[in-house]
Image (cartoon, rainbow, N blue to C red; front, side, top):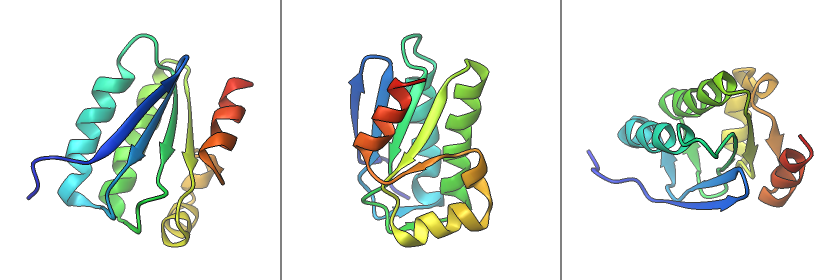
Length: 119
């Protein structure tokens, strides 16, 4: 099992942009991502998150559970989340599991940030 997870983090005001730089978002890295997101989202100044999944080719239920953890943390502090640029397979998984009802999907990171700035 890998000990690290590759990601980029940018902040624009109170919006964090978390770009996962992994091809597979599965059980091998989900725990590490959960840890990083928990640390990030429990910071006082962050209450909006853009999850940039443009690099992710495969996601399983472990990956989805990491995203849902972020959603729950944000919900508890009246925050918002957007999923940005998911590839076709990842988007299908989110839609099939009907998580697109609680995890709004944006075509681009820019679109997601614009939406969050309006809230």
